Image (cartoon, helix red, strand yellow):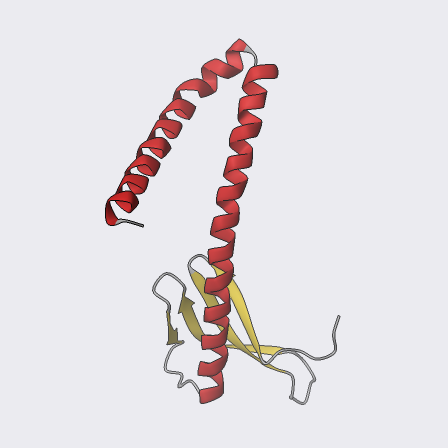
Length: 134
């Protein structure tokens, strides 16, 4: 573990993070974390915790983290879709080579409905793009 601690710690939570200022300069040499803000990645904003006033350094650190986090989430969402394509291929192979009748009875209807829904959305999106000339 590195001996240098960051000035801020971001505790990831659903749709954002709780932001803590990390303090090590105290007489007991203990690590203290003081919550200073809450970040909402859905709205792309943050609020000070309680009556706290954020410093320029706090705001800069939160803005940097928020920008980096949104970029990471965007990359992950595209990666998840590529994984879904792999899962569809693996599912087709499983259905063709390994699935029992009981297993197929369990998954056929929900899988067909999900695939139909996906196909409908994809065809609509592609048609919209073609009509806009993209």
